[in-house]
Length: 539
Image (cartoon, helix red, strand yellow):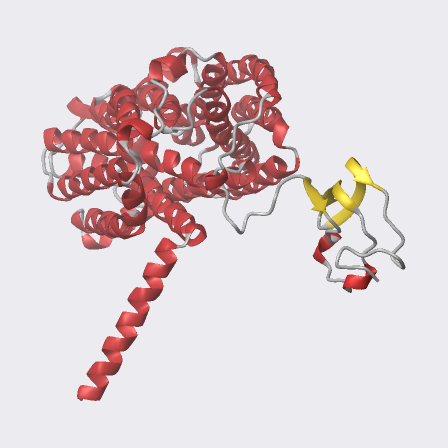
């Protein structure tokens, strides 16, 4: 028994040492950072969408908000996701669908939008705080706030408590989302790697939005309201613990740097005066307006125009996830191959979004409407994956390489779209109709797309690269010079001493992919006859 205990203790010690080595290894550490941030973004967006099938039905069943006199509180999300997953769909009214569209401006619509509204108001302050104290502490603050807001969601029983929990989640998201994206940009300094890492993080965001409604609806149906929120709260706790261990070496390194020597971030008001950053942030807002305004209204439109069934309404957003992932992968490839044309990728994405929005109202069958929605998500992936690394690049070349405030601006762009969508979409459709809503989105995207031509000039300047930011495993991105002095050996190949021919002083050559190509001369003397001369003594 004692020997078994000693063996187990040794195995545990070896495992802890292995984890410690991985955490202190720069390459492994930044991969762990990417995992932790992606997990935080996944949880944030799952919590954002998991209430869609739960809260409206809970308010209707438990708080008795389902009467005809109080129908105004039924949001379009209620009809969308409750009917999708066969939970308790609200009774179908004999009134016109316009009334159903307009319900998004009621209490449930405001409840859904409260997160984005709080996030919108808090982000300017969180960006400045992140620039001042670093990225890990604000991310931990965000995870802690998300944990408590999820617990409140689990046990809250009144509209006021649920509204407070939703608003508290917005506060946590302002810390977690902004610091998470900034941390990825800080860990991945090379443009192609940064684009890839941010693309992976965005895929987790999309997956969280996709999987949360069926996840929450199923658990709510079979296990009750508390279970899905407890699960998400537990995952927040696990992610926070991982963050504590992974970022410990970074905190130690930062503590050794005097405050006066640490890089100072550019204030957010100065970044907002940068026209390039404004153009990029506007592209993010435009690309997300389409989703923010279509998600609350497309379900009622499908019921009214094609008599869509419940499973069809739920399934309609599943296929677009695949082209979204494809768009991320393609943008990452294009960023590596054509790094100076990310603005063009975003421009094409806005055009695709606008065209697809125009096609949606003319799709009269369920199978047909899938294709413009897939194209819409493809365009969103193009814009988001191209613009987020571009914001970091703009800070590198035009400001200080501290990323809190610039990603606070990006989060403001997202929050602006999702704060207005749940509240205004139904009212707009009631006023001008679903088709004209899509026409307006199309015009906004197509009119904004040419503005992105303005970003093509940003690649005329290159950021300064500190040698401390380059990992040993990173290959040199460009050709480099080799200097050989006093009979140095090209390509590092060992030759016999007697084969050296007495070349003297400096010869400059270019190396590309470990191949010696060409030479130039600096104070270069002709080689002597190897039969009569040697550096290493007379022959």
